[in-house]
Length: 408
Figure 1 (cartoon, one colour):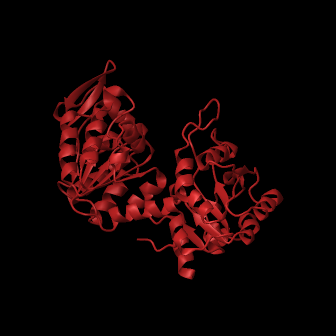
Figure 2: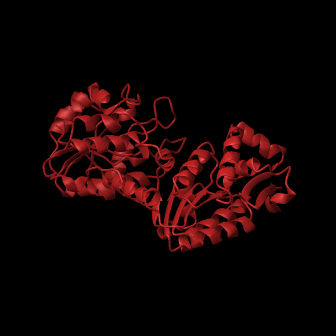
Figure 3: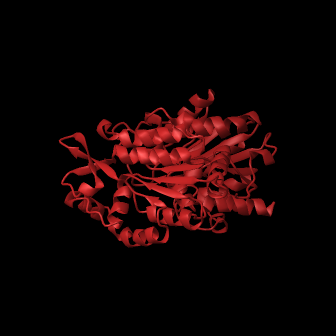
């Protein structure tokens, strides 16, 4: 478990606290309006509200999109939604570290909240670097002297060694916010001392990390079984020598996933029986679901889900597990014809008496669509940071908090 300080380690009354959150939210492509403020509400209820009650002067640092992208907008909407969630006025200032921002920070009163401009608008914000290197930037040098404590609550961005994520930890007492703390504790339970048997369900459409995750959790003896679905299941079937059909094989090539096949073959040989692949699949035949056994492949039709036999097989394994990690749905659950696999598997996770962690945007969307979020032990909204953690990588945002804690 990472060694970091938390909000509990500080007396924050009348203290100026810089809080890095992850307010990055999906937007309507036409109106640029936020269509889901879940992350804003989570930071409000779990961390910001507590800071207000403790009498802190809270200064919010956050990003939305990146320069040049369609979702790179001001944080004015985010500040209004935060105020709505906190049921109080929140000041927004479209400046990050200039004179206006500095003046506003100095005039903050106990219990007040200020949201500064989009940090991604700061030149070199996204440049990778060490905390010490980033602490020398104008961004950190201008704001750090005005603050007493830095709190990082942005676990979803913890895999980024950006200025606002790590720069302040080199010069200010630093702690994890409640969301960061909760995420790390849940992941620690899964990766450091999982109750056995432990099962990892890896699905989704992005397969480039699947080999690294599988290799890490098997080699580290974290997982007893890996269940594969979605596009991940397809590439693992190909590694077993299955021809999915011309269209499906071309799709894997287009996604540049065929390069994973030799490594997956080697992994299957090294851990015989540990990796479970689909035994049947669901194809799109004239926009209708039609299931086919793997033995009957190849098929000219597109494969969009695991079949019922596979879903039930996965469900049986999951129900016996004491620890379950789900990363990615097993099919195109957004389409009613192809949600059956994800529905059966996720219901098995919800019914399990073991500790369940589900994570990643599409996984969470599937869980919420099926109304199962409350039945999961832990739901993580993080994407890239979660994947890198599951691959055994150190996250710069977390390492920076550990180093800051070691200095105290």
